[in-house]
Length: 95
Length: 474
Image 1 (cartoon, each protein chain N blue to C red):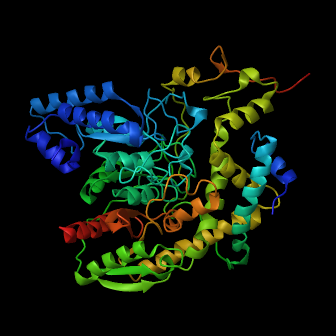
Image 2: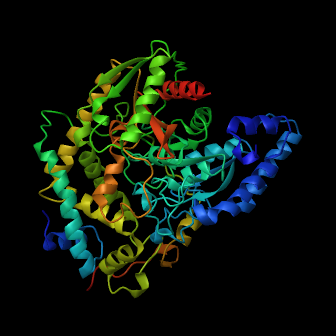
Image 3: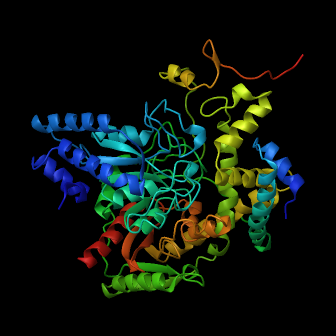
């Protein structure tokens, strides 16, 4: 149902590192789950609309106002790497 | 009777009449935790100091003869996926092992406004993904009824804490049965409210269109007290809605009960089926009218659920990336992609990674229509199934699970067999309906839960029908 190459491709899309052993395990387990999901293909959804949140919710609007965040320091304190109150990340663009 | 065995109403009355103080109650629960938590492992963290400080505040109010709310001074346990400002919140994941919440969930603020005492945070399946609490990164919670068995999941710690008198009540969250299944396995009451009825602000998201916070309690009356305290529209959760609850006191005479035939099928433990059938008979003897109904969508509810839930999870859990908070491999990584890959490889457990993979697959190019769109269409059909049923009946009675609590380790090797434990609970989340699990008997000397499903926003109807069973048992 799903092969090794696909598992590797999906893992990169999902930003999940997988080692060789896990790739094999994931291939087996996902295949068995996807086999089970196959039953959906046999069910006729007719012309049903797609469904999501409660019928009572349409568009929830609010004023676009600037507000001060009371807990900024706590958010900054949680950053794994930080410089002058900003999140620090690895180089994104190499020149 | 020990203080820790009393229900919320009894505790409240005792406080008001000054038969005991909130500090005495709190100390009694802390004593129970000290005695039992080592074996049961319901709690991941215990907030002893802040709990006693809060109890003292409530005692002072009582001494001043001030009127106190129902939950004031009464000790609660909170699933460790609901945030309390300044306290650790781990979601039972290694990636958040050292994370401290920077704000409180709306439900916590509502409880704090009443003066509730919060004893600590309870164990769960990592990010609420699981049916047994075996997926916690910090250890397995044991079922107080039989320590060799699982408490159910994912709110297993909350259910075990209530069942073993380590708290008066607890909050859990339910995405596909995560409140009802552990309530059933541990012999407590557990309510999953209507989608939108309780704010999800401050609940770490697993599958946003399905997640809902609810109470785990000792009695139906307690479930109503906690539900009334936490419900309501919240400007911080745009999917929450304001709907006034109707009184809806039901009479057992003439009560129309639907029993879905698809919920009694091969694979169900015959002993469990017997208990459920006998319970339904009790209602019938009391004067209720039993009608067999059909919820045809039940047969494909499980794959629909796992596609929608994992798709939403793959997006929701993208935030745990080693950049913004939590466990990070920033220092040992060569480039940005490596930070993501390695932080998530080492920080997330097996089941979480499996579900992220499944969701990413379902949403990926070429598969989106066949899986995700198809599942959303079928979700709508499942919803209509229920709407048609509720045109004929007041409530639906069904089992919570096909079995009683299973042995620790029994289902961990085969993910599919674990997913099947949720077969009777997931449809309710897909349809956004309220449902409650309440103890109705025993099979193999273990608790069996009856599931009462109601129409949207009919929580009071469910409480009323649940109360009937508690009254019949007396």
